Amino acid sequence: MGIPGSGLAKGLAVTLRTMTRKSHTAQYPDAQPELPPRTRGVIGLFEENCTVCMLCARECPDWCIYIDSHKEIVPPAAPGGRERSRNVLDRFAIDFALCMYCGICIEVCPFDALFWSPEFEYAEEDIRDLTHERDKLREWMWTVPAPPALDSRAEEPKEIGAARKAADKLAAAEAAAAAEAAQAETERASDTSDGPNGTNASDGPSTSSRADRPNRTDGSDGNGAAT
Image (cartoon, rainbow, N blue to C red; front, side):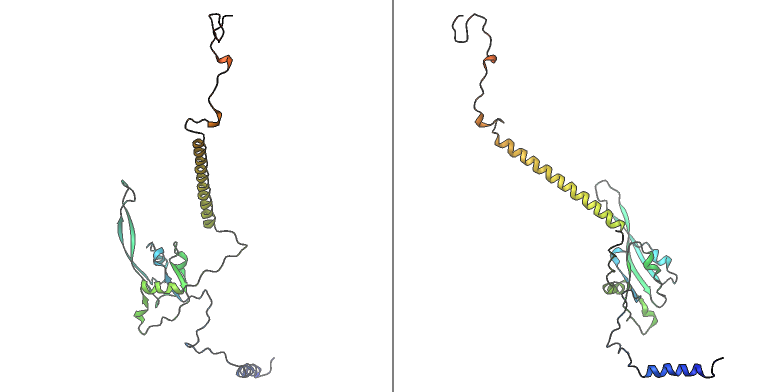
């Protein structure tokens, strides 16, 4: 059984030790806090990647994401092609008065249009002003930190491997085409140096051999003398 009052004495000892130490109070907002790089401050929107798939709004447990869009007809890329329709984003807003910062919308986005930003200074006097539109969400994209470097011992992502293979194949095809063009140019230059008739000028006129001469049947030799 402990001594009565020992717990109070231990608590007072901790208080006394803390009182004798130098405080580490940061004078905010004059001194900005050093936040971890993956701080969940606000959600930034990269509008160019958004395809209005509505997946983030459907998966949000608080229903604090509001999206409006309309469809546009895209003309065919080639004559005789078919017209296509695409979604155009009109509104993308997040009500941070309802958001519980779970990050589900960022995880389920298939096109990397939402990112965590360490920005945290977005307090408002009216709770209705905590619904921020896409212009404000786009501004917060500039505060999103760069992704951490990959581990040098990690496996290469499949997307990067596929892109590298495609680039290597394209480079090989271009090199083969350049080699064929160089070979054709060399052959063309060689044909030009052989003369207009395709024979070398140093060969001189061709002479026929004796065996190629026609046979005489009148009994005379080639010089007209009778044998």
